[in-house]
Length: 102
Image (cartoon, rainbow, N blue to C red; front, side, top):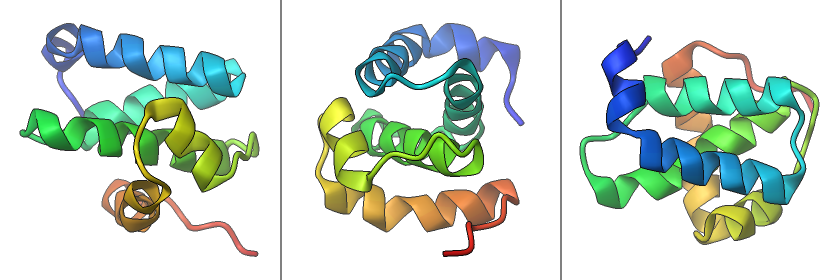
């Protein structure tokens, strides 16, 4: 979980997350889940926030059945697909979510 102050402190990052969600044409449920995941796993370093944002968006698309490809999410956020690939499973585990069965 995160504190309400985290939302205020990270308004710019949340605005970027929302802009990426717009580019991906995500539904409201996926957007809300992505913001919650991002704020719940917020890294200390600004350098790590963009890849964490991408992983949060990707995981949100998986758990809400509004699926997007890793590359598509990476492009929308402005990171490499590898950044998403390296972080999404750990983010799932940290938040207690189950990985999809493929």
